[in-house]
Image (tube, rainbow, N blue to C red; front, side, top):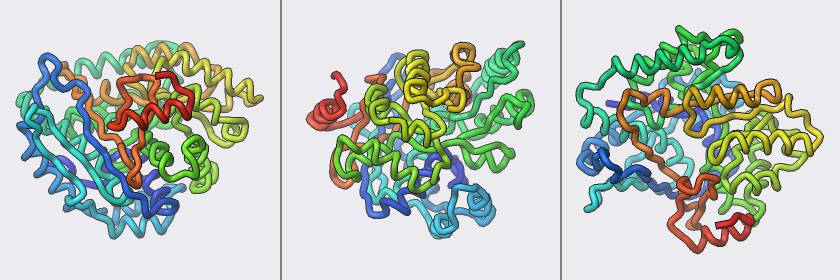
Length: 396
């Protein structure tokens, strides 16, 4: 089995799930799968592996949280005891997942049901699809090449003058495989170090954080703010509503706001003096990261907030060279954090799958994001997408 623990997922799934339990327990949602590089030269279709994927998901749905895992979650300062009690009874239910092979050769995956009972599917299902694909297409993977590439990255990070540059692993969903993911993390721990003097800040993967003594990282994802389009009082206020409900749940903890659900301009309009002071910083996940960083620093200064007290997190398709560029541009001007995903956990010389599972409906209503990278948009209702652009004053 590929997934053997329900902790083998990103931390922000648990932080969002706790909000769902306490604030939106009755919400119904739908997610859809998309492979962004389907049909690209050299890419094999995923449909031939549909039965293997189904079998792995069936195994996933047999898992439950172990006592040691629940104790670990309970030890986190922001996780509440009633949520841990709920997780003690929790299991994923296969009836909420539909997996099929389309005549085109593409894979169809949809997840539909109560948000509280479907939110934990996304990350392990993506990890399953990746590992099934690569174990079929690369039966004897070139681990030596992967190690050489990892060695190059580590040496780049150990360049003189970069001692304060810290990276984090965000690579669970698109990893080559679970064993390779663990090998990469162990190599980073050994050679970069952790803690105040180290360069590995932590990992988004809760299982490996527990196993390797790392700091688990993550706050909110796009699905949370997208769902607020259906759950809030009116569409125009949905981003503000999402931030306010987050603050209601965490009372100033987990204070990193996601900035690209409606594009940067709409984010800055909503992220006023109150949120500038309340939240610890913001995360970049689409569009030009250098422009984004400059706009964030200007916005803080305009709101009379010292940018040096705030954290900018960069997490959009980062490589180590790009991370170093960003660090050199913004160091000393603010707090910095960098989350590297695919380029850490799926860089063995093969083209990685660009796969996502995105929320497309909540309580029967379409939901979407208006990314600063248009290819990241995912919505099946063009009329709703046009209306969303109009409401948030985003050009098509």
